[in-house]
Image (cartoon, rainbow, N blue to C red; front, side):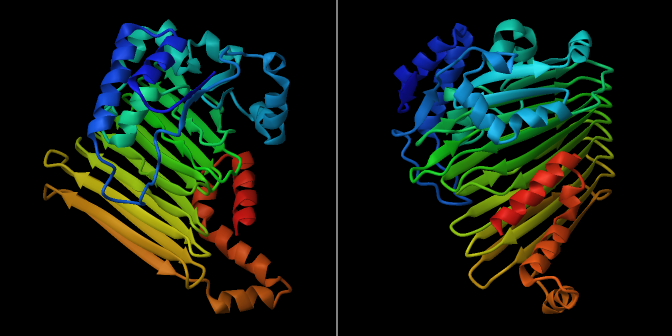
Length: 435
């Protein structure tokens, strides 16, 4: 099954394929109308997407499995080559989306006994409608921006996670997203609810092969962090250089809650992604640690947003960018401390490493503090690899390329140390491959 082109009729087809309720179908159609009326963002990279040529739905198998032996062998072999099956041994659960459908989901029996829910968004809509209705589309509305509207119209796949109160997971849950077709659009919708006094580490990975035609990835992620709870969302994005990566991610953090975005952007043609924390509850905290690597023809327009609403809230943004071979790595961020967010603190630190004369980096920030008892600190640096540092390493028998790798990996250390060991190793390999 393949659906090409963005029309009302095609949106109804997607809804019909998924057997959705009238309410979900109407949400899709309403989102489509908002998409038609909205303009492309006036900031960030220019996007030249022919929406009439995108594949909005494609699947050869729309049945959700919990056993790899039941998944089509060519798909299993491809995912095994990418290391997806091996990584599952380090996790409490895994979900895999291939093209438009989630094809595999599994979780330890121990978590099931604790009433943890980890499934696709479609399964959640059918089996847990009360929870989904309470949170779906509430943190990111379907008129948030043009690509959020597009996602609302054609979303397919993505994860739903519910962590009950007083539940703490020992190991991460992971979802893996794969685009494997020319002109493919992937529009997963992820909804995570970490209820009061609970914790979750969620890891996301994504790849696509390289084609001459452009592909589009426009996801929406909504996260609710309950009172006294903690959620960490780690992403290593390695899309192929023909993929537009245009994502909306936002978390709402309640009293004494903690939200951490660990966000890596290595691949894609053009990226626009600014994970956001809305610090609603008193003493809530938000952290965003990001890296962006922009090489030839790549534009990485990434950053973070922190909105302080509660009292005594804290936010911390650390951004590391690398630009090389004519790439453009831009940090774009926003921090707002509202009038009622008394005694709040925000720290922003942006560091960029430019490796040649052809490359570019900008820091574009909007910081505003609306009360006298709070403060925002912002620091930005732009540097090149020091000849003295290269000479020091090379004088000890290290080649120039190896010396540059060591310096760059050291520059990214703050990000790497926040990842589980197996993902830090994967990141090292990706960085070396892309230098």
